[in-house]
Length: 186
Image 1 (tube, helix red, strand yellow):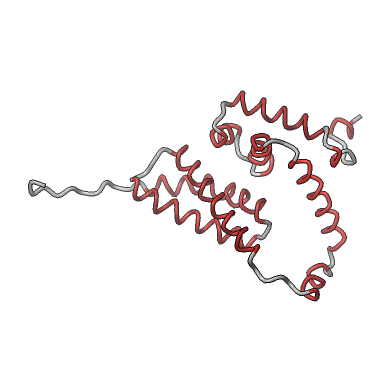
Image 2: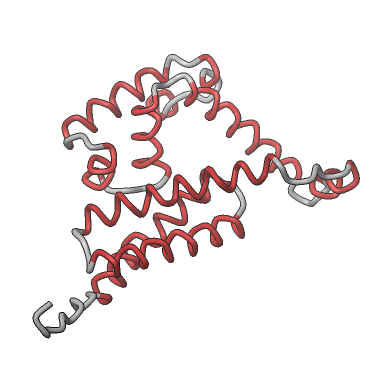
């Protein structure tokens, strides 16, 4: 403190914007697959991006890999908060539930829900690492490198986890009626 003033470091906001452009759609898809409500997913995404921006400015930037890990960490925390809020939300009346289901696409919606329930039950039989690997690569459509970084495994490790997850999923009784691409082409 000898009379010198320190100037705050410049924040590289263009790098932050580039990161958001690259990760934004994948982040929204990641949140949407876990929340199921488009509006709630968009709200959560905005809160997560706001938190990352505050952290980014305080840290004067950070490596992109760390920022992506933080981004999904913030998202997981916000999704957990949202789920806890939903548990305490008022229960819909029978009329409200009936009106939600009486739309023109009720049959297709029921078929999709049945399929989703079967897939969720099958995924529940996998271990956490296998489940996360499948979600990151096939649902969130992250690159293998990004998924491997989030899971803190190498690319070969991710391939091994995915191979084991697919093998275990094929053995799940919930998925026996769906067949595979190999069976369809035979």
